Image 1 (tube, rainbow, N blue to C red):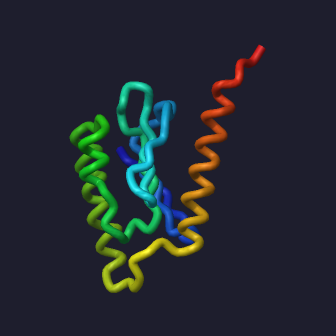
Image 2: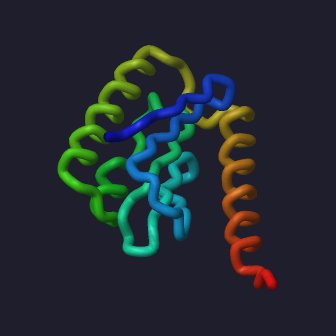
Length: 119
């Protein structure tokens, strides 16, 4: 079952599919990041401005997702896009850009720290 967390201030949505360890984060577009485990299974998706047309089909074609999670992702995609109808503007706002940059920096730092030998 997918869990979701929406940060209203950053206008960012995180959809968590699994509790697997994240092996890497892939930028799908400038406002969409996919967290993937070591076997290529999708662990989570972060979407900045989820009311826009985010590239769900690209995500589903690149990573392993079971049928139930795919159904739930499609429902979330439809739901969040529907909420944004009538909203003005087509570009990422400053807060959204700052959110994307912060997430990217955290993920790079986490990856770098995981490579430091301990002992």
